[in-house]
Amino acid sequence: MKRSLSIHARLFLGFASALAVCAALMVAIIYVGMRFLPTYGFSDTVVVDPSDVTDVVPGMRLPASGEHADISSAQDVWSTVLAVSVGGVLIVGALGLGAGWFISKRLLAPLHTINEAARKAADGNLGDRLDATGPKDELKDLSDTFDEMLDRLEASFASHQRFAANASHELLTPLATTRAALQVAGDEPSREELAELLPMLRETNERGIRIVHALLDLASAENAAFDPEPVDLSALVRTVVAERTAEASSYAIKISTDIAPNCTTAGNAVLLRQLLGNLLDNALTHNGPEGSVDVRLRRVDAAVVLEVANTGPQVDEAQLSRLFEPFYRAKSRVAGDRTGHGLGLAIVRAVTTAHHGTLDAKANPAGGLGIRVELPH
Image 1 (cartoon, helix red, strand yellow):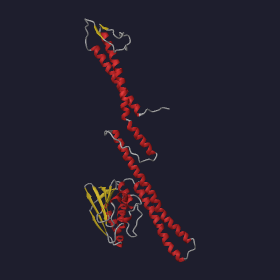
Image 2 (spheres, helix red, strand yellow):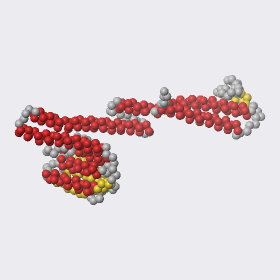
Image 3 (cartoon, one colour):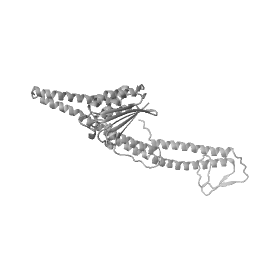
Image 4 (cartoon, one colour):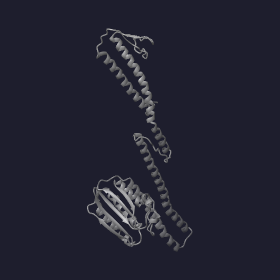
């Protein structure tokens, strides 16, 4: 079985290969330059002290320590230069390889830490962070990116756990109510008792159906492919507002609009209609008596901006980010019996993301919530 080399070994071998090639080129250049460029005329014998030179060239006799080598010809010069060059390259190469091994090991040490953190994350431990220090280099950027990924994964898993728990609770409530009603009906109730149970069973069943439909809508919005077809948001907003006018009147809530003409965006008309409907339903559901809803649509540079603001109870700033989580409902926002299933704003966020838009929410100082959706024009 073939085993692949580690990145440390490959980096070291690459460094060693480059060093060996450079050394060979250096020896060749020195030897060729000393042999062919100058001319030699020897009138006297020149002696050198080769105490640090070993006999590395075949056929050349170097004297023992303390003796002198006679250089009486050009061939002796070439041989001596070659011997000294090769000996120096071997010494420098050994030092360079040792330094390369040490430096590469130090440089790649953060990868070992990242690997350990990744192994812990794979085992389900998302709480550890690298918190890398040191110079701003590629490995530091990789460590910071890994920490950001762990932050998002941890938040995503926590959100999905809350989603599963809340979904189970929301679906369990109508089922438990239905079971209780059926138990009562199984005890041979009178016609009057049945007349009271049937509306409750019908309403409980409808609530379960609404929750399931909302879950399907959420899944559809999160997995929707981008549709480049143009959609006239101006006409769509007017239609959705007109559909909610009667419901708003029944709650004594006034809807005011400021809709600019010719506001178009690319996308899915069905999903965008659902986004608008959920925003208005949320504004009506979480509102005070004789409250108001303000709907504005306008062009801002290369974007279409939709703003829906309502009156109502005060909203805690710390809750704003969680309002778009599935099934999350701040108790302070629930007014009277106009409670929803807690998936409306989650669907709004999913539809906005599918249309490459941005979503923002802010608490109004006098109470209520302002939601801003920005979509590309």
